[in-house]
Image (tube, rainbow, N blue to C red; front, side, top):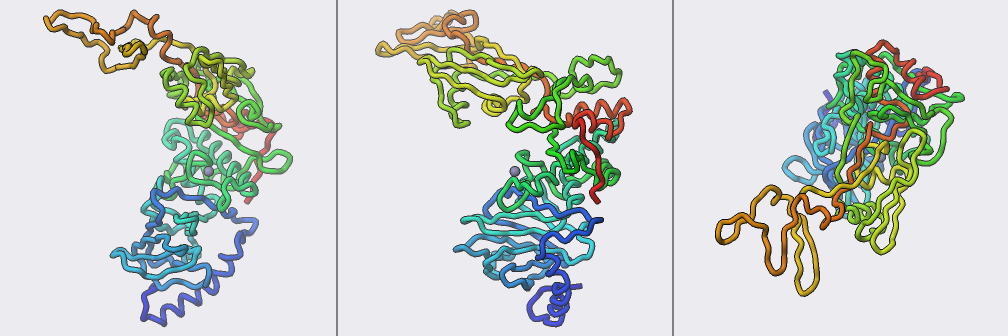
Amino acid sequence: MINFQRGQPKKCVSLLLILAFILPHFFAGVTVSSAAPPEVKVGISLLHSYVELSFDSGYCLINMAEGSPLPLAEGRYRLVAINGNIQVQDRQGNNRGVFSGPLYLKPLSSQPAEQFFQLHNARSGLEYRGTLEIFLEGNSLKAVNILDLESYLRGVLPREISSSWGNYGGMEALKAQAVASRTYTLYYQSRPRHPRFQLCDMKHCQQYGGKSCETENTDRALRETRGEILTYNGVPISAYYHASNGGFTEVPQNVWTGSYPYYDSVADPYDDPNNPLGLSNFVKHRYADWKKDVPLHSVGALLAGSGFKSPGTVEQVDIAAVSPSGRVQELYIRGAGGNTVSLLKEESRNVFDLASLLYTIRSEAEPRVWIASCANGVESKACFPELEGKWALSGHTRKRMLIGETFSVLGEGVKNAVPYASLIFEGHGSGHGVGLSQNGAYNRSRVGQEYKEILSFYYPGTVIETNY
Ligand SMILES: [Zn+2]
């Protein structure tokens, strides 16, 4: 067993010998043979500005500046940013060394995929495989998990798709997801989405929970598609995917910018909530039909919160343009003073936090109690939903409307005093609608389609190649 305690020079020497073998490979970056999966760098979202980790004797912590192992035994440590350096503290808070960094937590095993360490303040995981890089960014520490692509995907799939589908006829959907996620990751290897790592571990890139979230079904889906990626003209595609397309796929240029030859906008009967094929085992996504009520008085704040100028009191909201799939391309909002805001493509989904762009909109008076008041000749009104259904009593215990010199109560049925109080969004599907629909893939799998057939529908014109 290798130990890093001070006062044990013999063991440290043996460690250095091992590192002398490992380090050149480690610091040379990607050293993969054609049969090995490539390396992925994943930014781990932390709950704090420090890093709290624990590891056993199978790991060592290395200071990049010196390239030598730190004399630390297995255990739990907190790494904190202090005056532009990284201080390592033990569990009792004692200073165990100050380093310029970056620091690397590195497995000593020749089979690192079988080892894992704990990262105690990660936002969406606890145990992780591979190596951890810890570096300073301002007064915060950042952590990047470096590991092989297949190990990474073991922590992605369960976060991105329901692994239990594998028990209900959905294994081919899990395999389609495995190929899509693998391709998605490879696409961003040469186009990192963050400055010091390829992808983060949140929805922004691809959700990743490390070893903690691995499951049997998703591991199997990865094994049975090992190394397989989608290519177009021999290069990995930008493989978008989402939860449910609501019955119609979409092309990227109607959601973001940039078009690709391997997407199409067509009806998808396997994800249409109306089940047009009359499938007996059809599964309807929980967001197949959705409704969202947005109080009108909050529209200005929602727009401002997303960086748009508030149009003031909203007077008119119109869908100004839709794509052939029915997705809203422009939502037009006009305020009382003539100020207007146009929300294009994904903007309306982001501002109002909607499940998809496949929606219609109407306005409706809120069936809630409003109190309109007037003081010094200035009228105002405020919503008190908690008063709905309550009776107001006068001093003589007679039921009556609150009528005073400065206020009155307007309840349901007096809608003309509050022109329309809510925007009602009603829509179908969840996500952008581009590429693989997970729910559509699930239904296709349940009727016997294989993952290659599923992928050829959602990414037409692509081929599956085995990369390693
Ligand atoms: Zn990201």
